[in-house]
Amino acid sequence: MASYRIEWKQSARKELRKLDRPLVSRLLKAIESLAKEPRPPGSKKLLGSDHTYRVRIGEYRVVYSVLDSILIVQIVAVGHRRQIYRRLP
Image (spheres, rainbow, N blue to C red):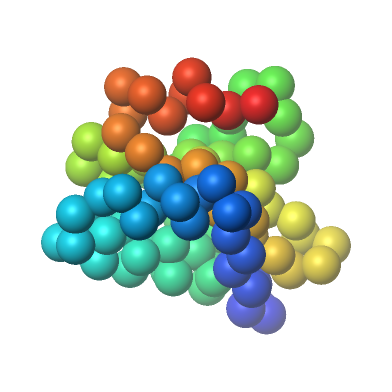
């Protein structure tokens, strides 16, 4: 199986920079693992979209889109579970 490439939306990068370092390292490790397995156990498909998923890391969520035709995982949003879904388009 081919490896996917990780791409970041600028807004997701900005959200990640606001978090503290130990949490950022946990989130980055989980995001890097998405390149090998874009739909790991525990990931959930979000309603209302064909390609958007979320993965839990503690109380934080990573929302991402999987584009299988071009092997890209695009990170859409990163944030606390209380606020993450309010900011999604």
